[in-house]
Length: 355
Image (cartoon, rainbow, N blue to C red; front, side, top):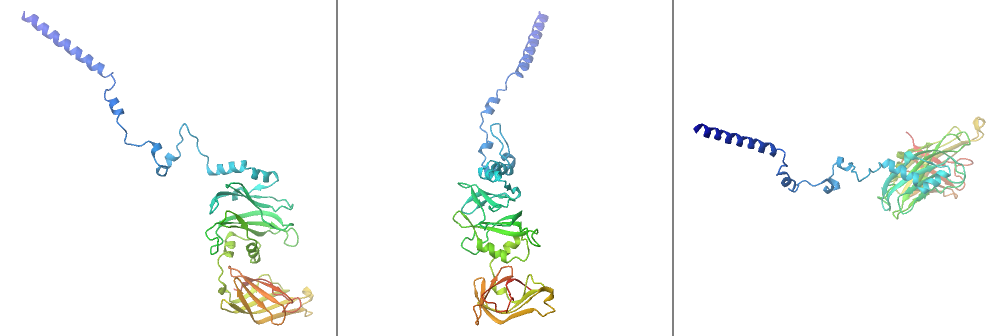
């Protein structure tokens, strides 16, 4: 009897152990009961669409989702705009070339963001060979210099700059545009040597660009080199200190047949006192041994200063001589009336200080 009871107890224990193993094995295949509860807990991290743009990292800014497209690069965008623009296309059909290295997009005060595109042609027809196409406003604007017909032949587009050239004037703080281009005349000894021309547009603070002819001509008169740089142009538009002009100056293009020297002995900001000595050889090489050398002078002349000029008026005739002073330290003399220096002797021209 005891043996039977013992066997029965052992059987019960074994049966209980097998059920326990089955329960443990089946529990590993069931879904974890805690996962749904964890998934329902609100996240404390914001999604990428909730991050303000200003705070996004560079990596986040260039990420492209399946529902969006990548933005083109600025250069690709500019090329696309120029290719599809009808104004640009009209110039291309007429044989103009886009100066791609000089295409710039910038914000102009009082106007907004504008893409400035220079177009050029080697044509010798009446149209001026350079224009600027401004794209970005309500409508395209074309800036073409207003120059007389019969212009020189276009050679190369050298530079375009965006500067405030009126730093002490009414349009202070408004960015202007100027272009440096080279041309050739095609005649004479230096006909094939390029020379620079400056085209300058002022931002008139009213949403327009207006060509400044007086300043263009002034820059041309100040040139003693055939070509110009942006730095040299900027030197010409800086504020003028007229009291700097004192000492000895010489004509910049003299030769053995003519020349002139000017000495400014006094400059009080209201007037200058000066001496001039000029000469002219008549008859070329044969004139010197024959004594055909004409000379003339003014001693102790007084010229009254008015803005960037000083004007001398002869007491003996209607002769006048105007000094036009430039910020780069040079000045230009213009004469009118019967010469006070004698027959065929003149002092007109560009002067620089002697070294």
